[in-house]
Length: 238
Image 1 (cartoon, rainbow, N blue to C red):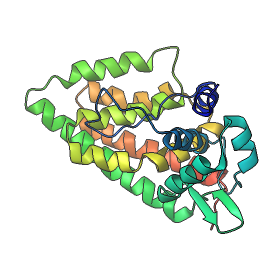
Image 2: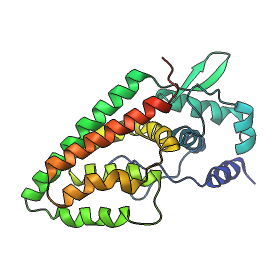
Image 3: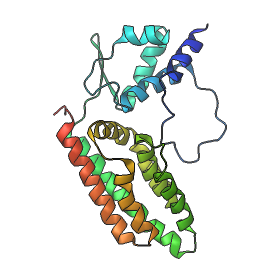
Image 4: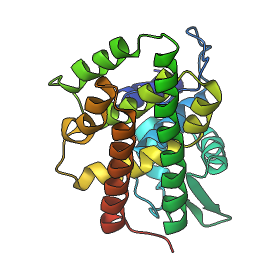
């Protein structure tokens, strides 16, 4: 079996799904990923899902053996993730999963609140323009009551609302935060006893009733509670 096949198989066997957030306008037909990109995807998902913890040193030998790869694509993949802020490398000493700081947490949630509350304003505007947003919100309502939902759905729920706002610039801002959002999500849902239904129905119900102010309050409350749970359980680097 080729080196590429080994790595691809190892990644596929982790029961992971593709990243929940994708840049708007992405083509339906994509060129095959390079070997370096495939390895980077594997490491990125391990970090974003919380399988590799903040501050944890990356065991190069374990990754090389597990994926059946050489050190060259591994090092290139680390460089990609370092540019994304997910990894910190020290010359001659190795690489670590980037830690998280109180400042980063605060800034991320400030941006989330700004984006998500404004998205709700735009959804109300789209409805006033005659767009049938209730139909799309109804699809979300039915999805919330599905028996087969998990943390990935929770992130998709917010993404779907922002997409419903129909503003590509706003969506780009959210996509730019996606790594931060998913890291904090993995921390939160590791300790949370709440389900996606409990957390998101208070947002969706007023939206279905056309109560956009009520939905904004629910979003702010949801994000505040989420941030509080992270502050209580996360290990910060500062």
